[in-house]
Image (cartoon, rainbow, N blue to C red):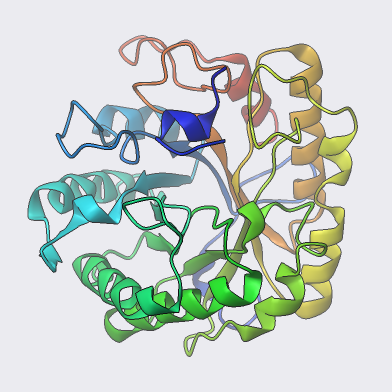
Length: 331
């Protein structure tokens, strides 16, 4: 059975937000940053570029820009960007070319550390890892501090740590970024996979008061899938989840003056599944005082027949997939 985690080598505007820019048009309300994940940089367990993993291409950037998307979430592994305590200028250079290509279209790039708060050996990070986590983010952020269109995604889907333990680590990463990049936006997920519909029950909401950013430029990132299995395309969508899954988190964020970003959601091309996606998008656009945008999961050149893929088969003569038409209807 295929799921996005096993493919990656893992088992199953208020003050501070004024610089976010002008929103795009929407069906009801507006979202500043509709977007897409461009997967590949997080793939595999080896370190051979173009064999174990791949980064987005400038041709992909042009395609998604032409469809009106304004945010690219680019998953990466820090072990490929930082080698021996220094920036790996090969991989960093490729990412910079994508960042520059995106800037030409006024698109933001969210560099997402896609590691689930695990060490390279698969064991969970703990407080002993805080200095190293801080140092990694300081090195990465220093390379992009002059890039106006870069956001930093602190960590994808922590799930082992308690919310309190994870947010202690998160504060270390935030501190590392702020040493060299005081003005860039940072997205922070909660623990327990960071789902929107579990934000309250997981304890993430209560523990998030621990988060500290001297620049006041944190955005809470959440993910939401419709199968209650973490995003497995072969499982059916749970009917009604699209319309209801964001409600509790939205109410919490509005009450606490927080901004939210949906870093992942996906649908198959099945009409019922697409209906759930439309319901979720409709809710986000109607609550755009809280939701800054989303990045659909996912584009990427190596997905092949993956059920959630939005990547066209041929970028030279792209034919939009049903999921792209779903997104475009709201822009």
